[in-house]
Amino acid sequence: MNSSTSLTRRVPEQARSRRRVESILAATRSLIVDSGLEPVTMTDIAAEAGMGLTALYRYFPNKPSLIRELAVRLLEQDRSGLLQQLMDLDITANELLKLASSSYVQLHRDEPYRLSLRMAIQADSTLLAIDLEDSQNNAQLLAGRISQRTSVPDITTLERFLLMHMTLLNSTIQLMFQLDDEKEAEAVFEAFLTMAQRQLDTVL
Image 1 (cartoon, rainbow, N blue to C red):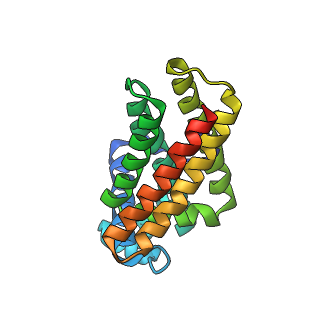
Image 2: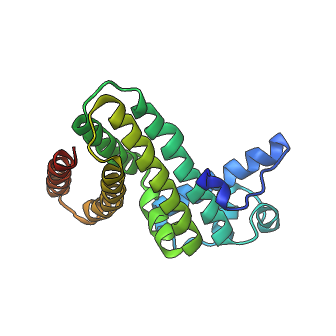
Image 3: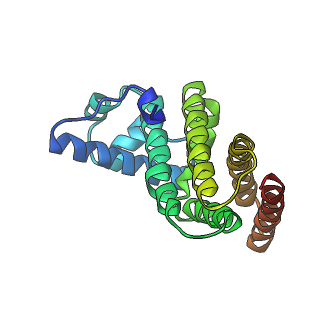
């Protein structure tokens, strides 16, 4: 099952409505980057999107519904964008792990709103369930890709390792962004990656 469909979503049919939804989501992302998630109100979002508050409520009845839409889109983007780009690369399992992890960290640097959104996912039981299902599916895809190019003694163990790696990677990214020293943040990531690659070697 595609995890993004686990949450009921109303998709506007008219092009104008779709554009307004995109404008609302872009405004929300911008405000999250500037102020964080908690202080942002629906009034702030309406003003940033250049529309009245009543118009905003026609698309999203409240702030949680808007945040959920952003979160589901984030998961879809990672799956259809980053993950699919990696599937056809002719590289070793360790190289794949390094590239996937590094690319994921770079996404958070390029799109700072992701960190606040990740925290929102952790605080929402519905989104957390969707995130877990999505991570399980991604782990299965990556494990299948690795097994096509490498002899894997136990693919179930590999899937579990990749699932744990994804969870720990998100925690590592949170730590990196909390550190004021950019070099120290990079050192933390390199240490995490080294440990992950060593563990992967034991699984393979």
